[in-house]
Length: 464
Image (cartoon, rainbow, N blue to C red; front, side, top):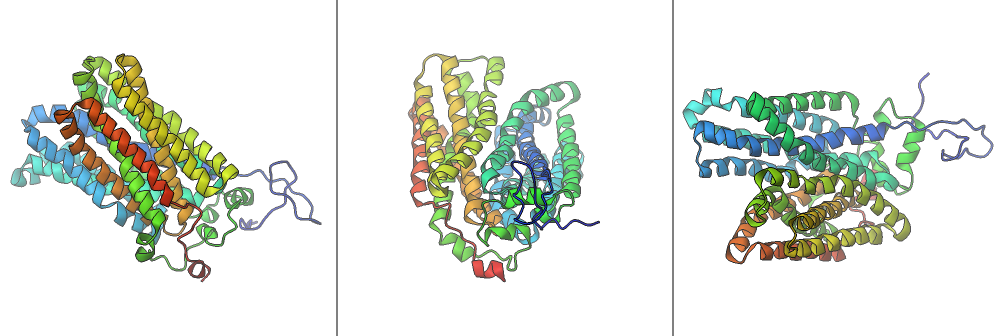
């Protein structure tokens, strides 16, 4: 017998949907497919960061083996950033237009294949014609194109599969995969490169990605109502507190899937998210790129110990981001969407800026590193709320809005690479970190223009 999952089944136990008057109670335990989707997406979010660290660590062996100059290595590393930054918006739009299931499966398969290609570049015939540096650069560019879909389209999936009361926590678990990848990657990749050769980690990451793409496509669906494993009680949980008809669009294909770009770019909330994300990514890129160098050259910590301390920002991220997701959900319940989201961002921003400022001035290395690591954790915790807000302001087009926001974030990261080096060289590292703290404060100020309770979705189009 086929069960109509869109119907509301009565229940007879605490915590279940209440039975309508006059109908017999039938207890129905909610399925947990939505959390399986979150787990898959968390793994999907962490794998690209493993791939990025992969080349950073293996690059030492590659540069020595093939006698590549520092300039050539810089170009190869930068080529990934180009592909990654400029394809967020097209990837987010594709997720809105064709659904996250197919687009994410294709994206993971794409970047996994080019991860493997990176390992075999020296043996490809094209390397003889255009040179090894260009061949590595093209492979890394194409890898960035594939990985650009992960965050905006994954974030859209969070908006579809999670209701208002659980969206913050679920989205933060998805984003915490980044921290988990940052913790596990350095020791694993270093050991594999040393014992099995630098190519081994690329092969492993490529195979893991291909398996993930197959698993995602086989298990996930674009909407909860299409999944055979989702029962009516779980749909009740996902739909809870979403009375607005525009939010109910997550349960069916939108009638007009074309992104209204004029409406998106005329929204003060979207511009506020773009500015806030730009300013939050600026300081966090210091931890992704300069932190190890800062520990060795400025703090005078040994390379071995710096390798261990270098994972502390990712450890802080893994714990603080899910907690902040839970906190913002509770704040929304207490203060409403606008004040709840804004207050949790402001708290994270304030703590991050204070710890950046104090950590750069603390003489004791251990205490200073702990403060700086916590600053990174609070930064990414606040950033998680921005991703949640993309789904608050639009259900139909959150992939496109997420792509716009993260494109600006990538530009902030690029500026950080250049400006941090210039400030540190001219004025010192303390001043460079102080400036990062100031930029962090600006990200909080942008929230005066953001209203998560004001939807961009057109009710008339959704209803049509």
